[in-house]
Image (cartoon, rainbow, N blue to C red):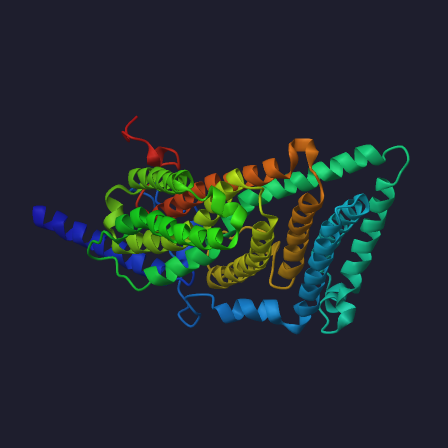
Length: 441
């Protein structure tokens, strides 16, 4: 009897191992695990049906596929339109005039809504051919709607009766967009680092133990703090105003900020991972994600500390704005391709894919990206041109935004690691419960 039970147990373990092997072969399966928080097992008696695997499809979305979307002749004209619009915003912001502020508001909202409408019209085949043509006529539809909305807003800003209220509401809207984008920035920034971590994780097998995750999550903020210190040294040698503030107090607070943020993050990660952190795949993913993502957080921590001693440098912020804009275009394209790949693999199974995945596709992703990033770019240049006295001036907005990014970034690190653990079935607790100590409270 005991021998029969052992044999049954051995067969169950073999079946579970086979199931894990099947799911691990799904292309972008690790990405699906990270983005589907409910994919973990909820009980020992739950029956899980695994999808058949088409091994002919690639395991990862290549960079070439994403670049093909961004550099295709159908989208090149729209990318150039976005760049031209940002250049116009930049020129207008240097004038510091009232008319420039109104132009940025009008064009910013106009093109954001114009391209959003264009993205939704792309589902109609007749319009899609015109919008995605390879010549300059492809911008006719977005320019028509953008221009129409911009003129409407411009007239509203010059209305004798309501112009003050309209200007106040639209100005607050751009400030709100700027602040909200700090949350979005931290979330979107995870995509390239997560993809890098997944590719590295694929090189490890699930057997054996390693302390790589623990070591890199401890050392990453320290390494970036040291690199930041050398960068501050270079800046102080070239900016006389900053050299006066680059003293022992500044250095002390810089390392204090990075060590404190690193310790807080590591504490919650340690609570969440428990013994699973020694798993080679989990540890490798967490390690490589930390290496990259802490560079992003250290940038914002450095600019925040710099702005405490000096006027916030919109040169740094605007440069990073351009990086963020192209990152969002990359990330949205990545998400669209990933969704298509996942649907292709699961189309013949009983897995429910939902309808939301059809919202952004490879055909309309560039228009949604331009819509979102135009609003973000307008908000940046609006703040560079305006005093933004409605919420305490540009300095207050800049400092608050960097604090939001830092706090959101720590949350993103925890969420990404949590989704990995639940996606692989290691833990079943909710996000907050996974970090509680003791666990049985």
